Image (tube, rainbow, N blue to C red):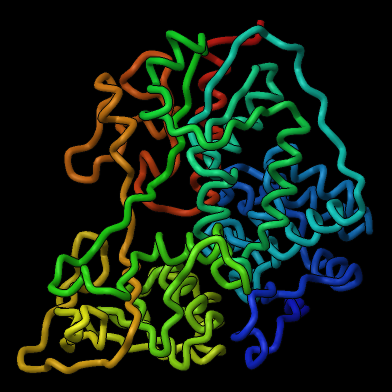
Length: 463
């Protein structure tokens, strides 16, 4: 318990703020073995209980400690089809690592770093092993959305003998993994490889197919003859503040800003789409998406990238590692500060943001202390680009074209039993952000896996 956790080497902050290369460099084999040797191999591994997809954590870590890195990757893939992604973007510090016994008196085992190492080692070796699948059962399932929930559901079902087709609205598969998370946190080549693995398993992916427009959910049943539909279309509808000036030139939702950069490669010399790079960029919000946006602005050439957040750092929902990386790169944090107006010049372009100071009052429904405006505290921050990163909600297209699907009145999320993924419509299942609202990649994966088990139990139960 006295052995220190092995830190992962990272790209130098002064250099990485001007490139889109991945920040963490990964473990060497010796580093991975040393970190794996710290695992206590608990008889009742609480870390597994903290994992939404129940990765067999002590088992794969034990294989790394023995030097059998490929076997470790295959052990992870018994329950997680996207380990290279999870090892990079999952909040392990609040899930599996938070349950680690070592963390009670010291530093927990670096489970996420080890998962990443195993998955990367297998991929780079070219020794990708496909698991044995059950014989075809004749049942066909349509999966709406190729984000983490949809891909996980598809992977579980195809292994169980189902014919699976994933319908993706965009021209690239991956959902939020490709349009929302920047290259410096999750290289798109890795996402592509994980998707190719699922295709090798037998998952069919149809792109540029907007369910609700190209075909409705009912059409998938009636015309395409699917036996079940899983809706994992995420929460891609951006939220705005409703303040004056939000329609000014230079104001982006984080969704648009990151999609232009990540999916459309606006940062390269000959991009597929333009983007206003900005000299002074303000990002409004305190979550992971806000950190991604602020750090992207810096890499796009901003002289100053600033975060404006209405609470204190203690209340910020972003991962501690993302806040730490942003600070290292020189992102300026304006805390206890709330925009009340976006100011534009005569040409309609942004020139600044009028803000007010805030102080924290009593806790609200989220358990965080409610921000309260300090009267007479208005001030202006000069800028030429503003990115609004205060959350997303589900696109209503699918519920609007499928009246039998019921949605919540407040958030517009599809009503589904989160325990089994079943909706109020026969043979339609749902999971991930479309049900919970915007959450984490791993929680969406857990929901996709849960729904896959329900579909299998309903349509093709084992004897």
